[in-house]
Image 1 (tube, one colour):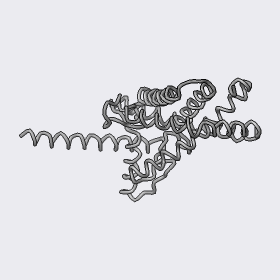
Image 2 (image 1 turned 180 degrees about the vertical axis):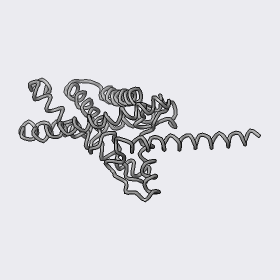
Image 3 (image 1 turned 90 degrees about the vertical axis):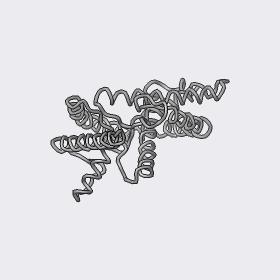
Image 4 (image 1 turned 180 degrees about the horizontal axis):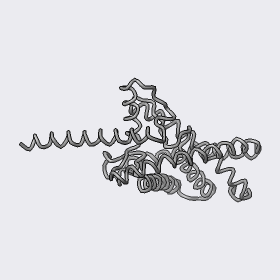
Length: 251
């Protein structure tokens, strides 16, 4: 099998390569999805750069499952369901990590039926399963071709090294912001819906006739605290408004 024909270091580089492809393509996909759904260009990730690690991990898992089963006589439906379940599991772990460590929801499925904590839901599990089917029948073999190309172009590993270094630095800087957000959410017993928070910043800066920065919507000092406070007040205001309407209906 392909996975057994390479040494550990080469295998590691292969999956870094796959992670690189998945992270960047996932970023582009989410960028246009948010543009179509929300009408604004909003940086879809928590990190600053043009990559979404959760998609990178997802593509690595899909590729690993494909490599393990593609030459075996296994029912394709089983493989596709396994891929879809794995993608949902990655989404669950990623969502819970941010929710528990930072009080942040990077995405919110609260309005979807039978969701769990707004992090996963059957609808998007079905989407992941459909994507898994597309991967199995149309993309998996092309990924193997890309890996074969990479094995013959090891100089590309330098670019991967730069990418890996940049994403590590980005992760450290973004973690610093996450810790400040965590402190705010803990002190105020408050959960931040990150997509909504970024849109709130964009709308506020538009009203104030300030230039909205796509990659740096806020600074990590007082500027971040200011936006967090304004966001919390806006959420409290909308909650009070809904409550007053409900009370009027009762009367």
